[in-house]
Length: 306
Ligand SMILES: [Zn+2]
Image (cartoon, rainbow, N blue to C red; front, side, top):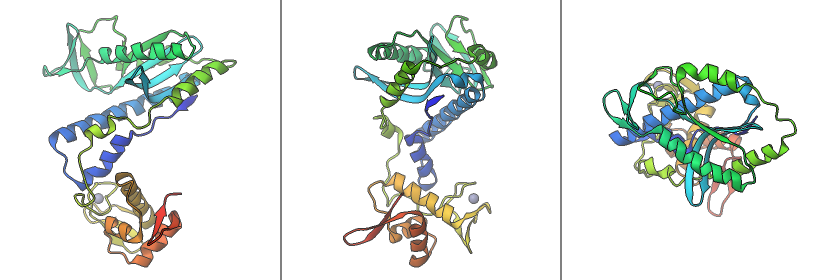
């Protein structure tokens, strides 16, 4: 039973929207790729859980919590009547090794010790759960979901699950009966309600941009270029030939505008300028009217999402 769904993180969505419209520097690109990969790994893990009997556990995904002014992030939390499982999901790919307590990529490049991060979250979650009146044991585990992950020199006692162990691990968790565990549902709901929606870290990796600095146009769903043009009643990418319906293409692009510029009004001229299809006002107006709510402002009319 899922009590908190995983959604694409806002900072990742924002950068996806920005990507075709500006150039990212090396650091920003690397960070974007790493975050995409992390998110992909988390979704892969969700799929494994949701297609197994483990889906009977109470599930909370992607939580940002706070204990005594310290925030910590949880990829996935499973609650059973006997135990709380805290999972940190890693989508590492390639060969890694451990030396002492340090983790390295095969090239010798040191990576952040995932166990340390895990223990930090665990040590903050424990008192938080206790403060809510529950005394369940917590088991914290790092799950490596990428089948192309290899780890050398790992101690067998480490709280990790390797890709080759995942299926067995999930099988072992099995299913639970959550009948008459109303209080656990309360705990899960309480934790979900404590989730911090706007992470202070969200803006940290977002490149700076202004309306003027971004390229305008509709980005292609297939090749991401801004070479999408009007083609009769449809949109067509001049670069790769992909086509998309006019309405969905425009609405998707207006949604990008809303996310990138939450304080700017959506007007017919703004939509035309942002989409750059050389479309006449009436045609754009008709589309906005059909999908959005018209708001009569003082000077101008603008549109809002329903
Ligand atoms: Zn294209």
